[in-house]
Length: 104
Image 1 (tube, helix red, strand yellow):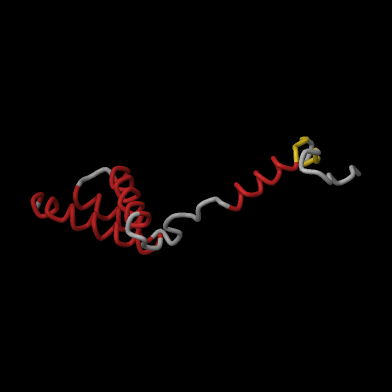
Image 2 (cartoon, rainbow, N blue to C red; image 1 turned 30 degrees about the horizontal axis):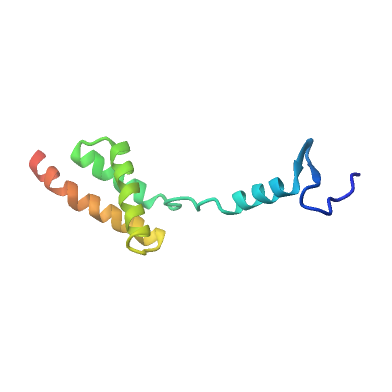
């Protein structure tokens, strides 16, 4: 069993790889800093799929627009991620509702 590293520049053995303590600390920080899953309930994605079907649009395009709108509300508007995602769905619904009426 290898001895524990006592200084930051000493190496530690992780699995079969040899990494410095600074690299190990960085890896741990990266794992902890990962963003939480977006739309964990799937509610927003289902709503976007419904809008895409009604408006004859590509769901991938709407999801991309939804991500952009949610990010803008979160970072520029100070909303929580959940609130920003729900508001972005409402925005997209309002933006594409006129298209739905025009197609009927």
